[in-house]
Length: 465
Image (tube, rainbow, N blue to C red; front, top):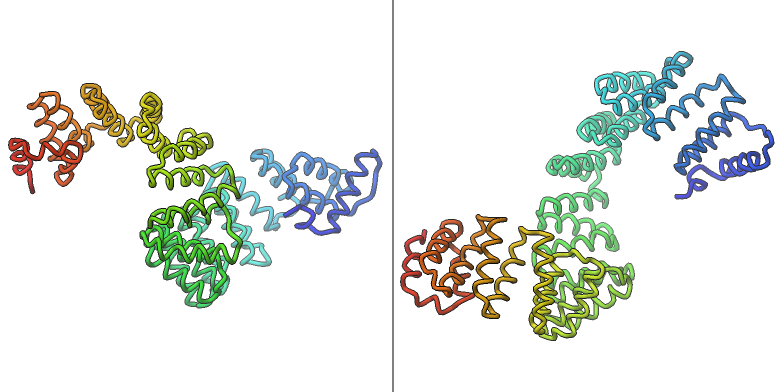
């Protein structure tokens, strides 16, 4: 929101008159309340230097107006000038020893100075003198939230619910704090408590769905989103997230009508079109996928995923030349995206651009030496080109970064056997079987003729669980 909208037309008019006064270097009269409004406007606009100037102007006109001192302390807090804020508040307290806002601000200063116990005592004083206890409980909780102290904030929101169980916002805030603390069960507990009070609360059902999604409990998340949609059919953000959960469960055909409904209601954005395209792609409807990816790219030309998706549809049709240009467009936008680079390297190789593919693998292994797929694919390129020794050296280098990767050991079995280093091959075979027996078939995927090597088969059988 604009500051004018937030603080009202009268404040906006006062700000304009005040700034005109400054420009013309005149002296106009403003009552104290008007100056406070001007200060709040500058704080809202994050123009803290101008806020301090307005406070000084107010102090000149009303030297005994304590709220100006408190406002100055507030600006100092926003500027991380906590000791100066503390000084202002100590002076103000001499004149207003029962001001709850003053104690609230002092508590915030103490929190920022890591004086947690003192902060808690000051917040208790703020509550003691507050006319509206619930409002002050919210204020204190928000101060703790702003300082990333979510457990303490949650305690105050729980107090609010004890005193006023119907205050919806407190339930959401506890769920939010619990979410940030990774305590999803507590978030679910309070969202369900809100639903018990108000079963038709779409926000509660929606947030419950989001929380279950974060727990990867996608079935329960879909159930929550469905309740949300029963209450309000055009709650499109719930439908969008339901579709995302269906994708997580590989239910692509079921996700498609949900995304289409979102697009019909909202008009569609680049992310929705991209997600819809991904569903079409996964069920083999490549033309439909390409159409949706293109819509996404048209809406947002900087969305690398859309260009990459177009390339994938061509690649799956074995149209590597057409795919290449779209992969390159995606990588221009995200040059260090390892997933994109891996697919681009394979595409270059398929088109016979060996050097270009190797340059990409070199970059990938430099960006992330622990990325298994880049070493395996690069070594396979060397193997396919007949340079088995180079293939072996690449995997040996990969093992320096991850010696417990069983895929590397199984791949070495193939390369070493082809090089005649049989004993060394069997050593890596045994090591790989010890790490992960079930994946021994990876050896035969690379070199099927090894299926008839009896000594190799005997070793595998000896390690079978």
